[in-house]
Length: 110
Image 1 (tube, rainbow, N blue to C red):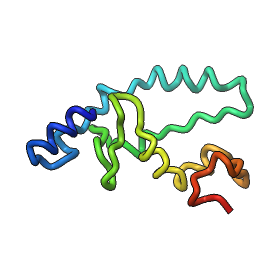
Image 2: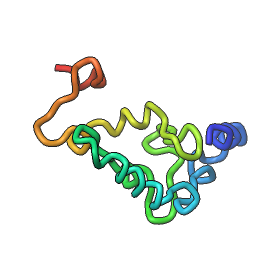
Image 3: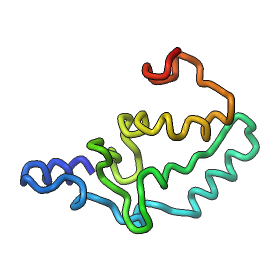
Image 4: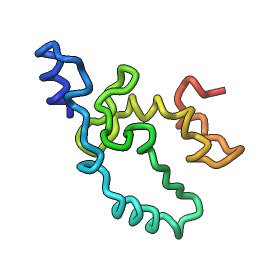
C-alpha cells in the first residue's frame, strides 16, 4: 500500500482511487468468524468489525479523509485507527465503560 501511494504521489495522480483494494481480495469472512469464535471464551475480549469504516461493497479505500488507511494489505495504520476512536469506543468498551486514561488518545483524556 505505501508503495502504491508513493507512486501515485510521485506521478501526481489522485491519491487513493488507484490504490484502493478490492474487498474480495483483502477480507476473508471465514477468518473473521474464526477470530470471533476464538474470542468467545474471554469475557473481556470484544471483536469489533472495522470493515464498514474502511470498505464499501466492492473496495477498501487506500485513503479516507486524507489519512492513509492501510500500512499493508491487511493492517490499518495507527493514525487511521485513532481517527476511528470516537466512532467505535462504545463497541469496544461496551456502554458506560471508559478506557484507562493512559490508553486513551489525548483528545479524550478528562
